[in-house]
Length: 298
Image (cartoon, rainbow, N blue to C red; front, side, top):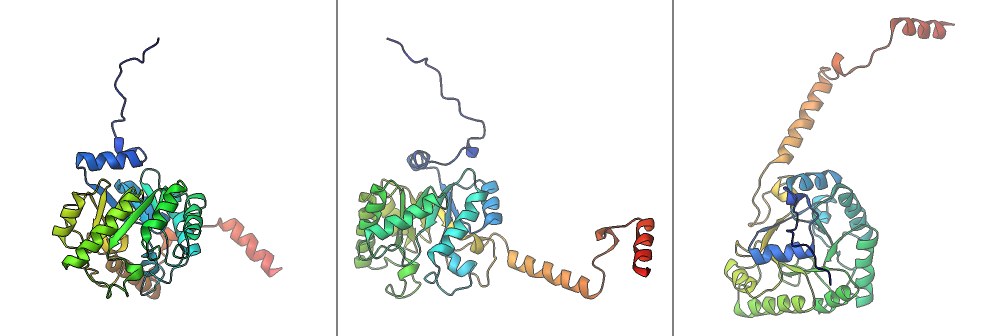
């Protein structure tokens, strides 16, 4: 009978360069290591979050508002989401990639939800999908997708796809009844097999209490500091959109102002004929230029 050598597992010095996996996410929760999640919608954004070393990247249906110009998340179409997700996939190596199932792509039936999730995995290269809607019983849709072999991230609290039914973009769980509803939804999604869950816009005290009962990682956005990780929208945290955004947003840059200033400076240089300068121009040998002129004259 042979035995395996008793040697330690060799871990690279920079373990953050390893691809993120579901076991690593579970281990991060167990160890109390904060999970960093951010959205991305295109190849340049993917390069930025890859180089920043985030753990999870979500191609959110917030793309409807951040890059497509809609006033809500509802109008974005499945094919649009797949196109954006493919672009993000090309820029990622290490983060765990999650695709957001857009409104109307999973509500009709379990079969529809599975078909949509399969497209995100097969066509766009996602590691998992996020389920916000799913009709009257999101847990049923989540369970069906998980049984099809695709990891699912749940979402409770403020769910923008159904914000009208929730009274608009406002915090949820501020009454005992609503808090119990959120708790029931979260536990049902966990029971259905979700690997993680997003808590959006719920009181910090409620998030802390519920997070302590969850066996899966809880990612907060407007849910306070006592959850397992945080997520923000790329355009919110970098200031690539007008306004300050929701109360829970912290702006780490003001890139829209920088972008506007840069384009305005370019426009000024063009109008004043200071751009392009000699350093931006290509040359031609004088002999070749003379030959060209002679050919034209002939």
